[in-house]
Image (cartoon, rainbow, N blue to C red; front, side, top):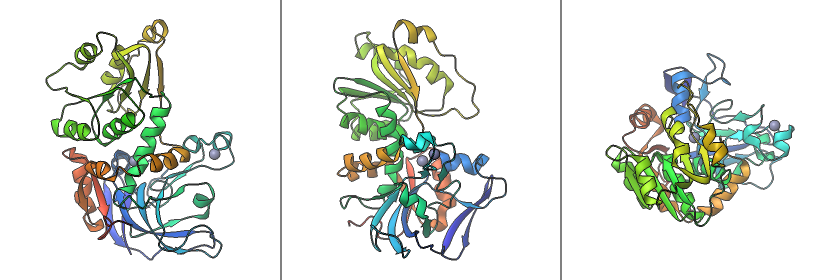
Length: 353
Ligand SMILES: [Zn+2]
Ligand SMILES: [Zn+2]
């Protein structure tokens, strides 16, 4: 089978490998679609702390496909089932796993990091991923080449739950990449009064608008703070979600918030300088500031249910499709920021169930 193997920073090659062998409790997924995400790009550039130097790895943690084979002891899944996989497998034994917070498990494993992921023709799903609830059925209304987006969607849903978006809220989203756009869609589904989204690229804002954002702010020629204050009669937003890796944006986010506003620092900063946070804003205006990373398996399940009929909107986030052999071009497309997400697909992945 064809695989795209990462073997160290800057090294990605398409190679032939034998199809993985199945244990009695394992499942073999015929990958139909896998999207490239910022995390893949970061691993490609810098490696990953969970990936010892020189370990070859198939990346790709946003993945969907059909069951090609199941081990003798697998129950509940059969050949042909359409599945999506939540990448972070908790240990199943620690206090965080016991509370359903598998994405915070200190001993987590992850497809595309510690286990081979979706950029290959067949992916082994080990028994422990099935046992710990990381495997989900894709609704029949959702084509498989949209289903990988349920991974970032689950992360966004998790992030919104941490700040409690509900009816009447004015929500400001900074950044209209795939993540900002998914936030816009989910915030509207949660009943937000207005979703206000800012970005420098008009093409991205236009997509955010199609996904439900009410107000599009092009930050090249407008001041985001002035716009938000104008729109809210000087009150500020109820919720701010920062979806760009910029210390300045995070430092300025408290100024966008109303009293008792809630802030989610949704994107990490990598090596960038740590911003100064206005602690007095937190204190005197009772602002709640948090961050979230990844998603619980429960968020993945809920996201699938919530967005089951939104495939056409979700497909707006796929700007180009590539075959696995063209993964280098797909990585270049993702890196350029010129579109939205590249999807690695095989023929027929757009077909309905
Ligand atoms: Zn991702
Ligand atoms: Zn654990």
